[in-house]
Amino acid sequence: MYESDITKFMREFLKQHPEEVDSQKRGRAIWWDKRPDERAPAPPMRHSPRAGGNEATFEASGGSEWSFKDDEIPPDAK
Image (cartoon, rainbow, N blue to C red):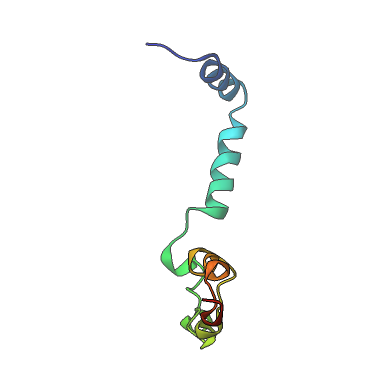
């Protein structure tokens, strides 16, 4: 079975330095290995975004609906 040079290096390194495996386990326990009661509580929903009425104040700054206004001939110029 093929093993990359990096995999071989890591296997040899961890054989020579078994304390690194313990260090990895301690580091993982700090961030990931948590029971549900040890985890931070979910944030309250009062901070969730909601519509505040500003949706109607949006004005388009360009696009197809505005691009042909200059091409319109005024009614009195006909």
